Structures are given as structure tokens and as C-alpha cells.
Image 1 (tube, rainbow, N blue to C red):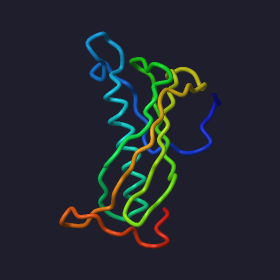
Image 2: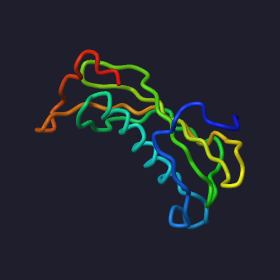
Image 3: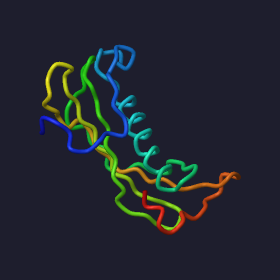
Image 4: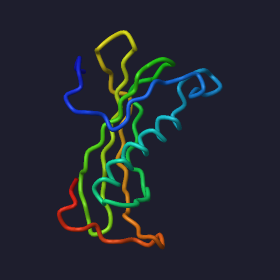
Length: 129
């Protein structure tokens, strides 16, 4: 892909042996959890408060992640409704000794802003980040 990221990742993490499945590969569920954290980070910034994940669409695994790879997670707001938003998340990996990155997964998450009673609440006008 590119040698240096143009935008800042919301999360950057090193894949560790504890993140593997029984076959020794990085577990897809670990990647999904990191993606949810990245999307949630952006959702909370936009809504200026608590949000919950309500849906996940179109998850695609494009390439494997190996133990020791640095994985960066990028998120972008796709759309926003009265109480909800759709956020695209993409992950890229690179070995710890190279600058070149490889896309590894992508998905679209839907979040709903909630109040103290865990009920949907409006996202204020102009809260776009």
C-alpha cells in the first residue's frame, strides 16, 4: 500500500502470542475487538458521550496478521442520523522492521448514542467530530 500512513490511526497495537488461535494464527476475534475499539473511539468523540455498537456490516479479512506485526486501525464517519452513525474501520499491518503496510481487514460499524439510562439520545447538530 503506502510506506507511511497519511492519517493517524485511532489505535496502533503489536499482535502478541496471546492474541493467537489454537493454530498459532492471529485470532479474527482479536482483530474484530480492536476494530470495535477504534470505531467506538471515533463514535464517542462525535457524540460527545457514551455510544454502543448495534451492528457490524461487511467484515472482510484481506490478509493474515502475524505475531509481532504492528496493526493500525483507521476509522471514518460514513453517515450520521439522529441517534446513530455508521463508521468505516480499516486495519493495516506492517512488520516491525519495514515501513510498507498491507491492508488486513475492513468493516462498517453502526453505533447509537445513549444517555445515562442507556436509552438512545440525539447526537447534537454540529457534533461531527
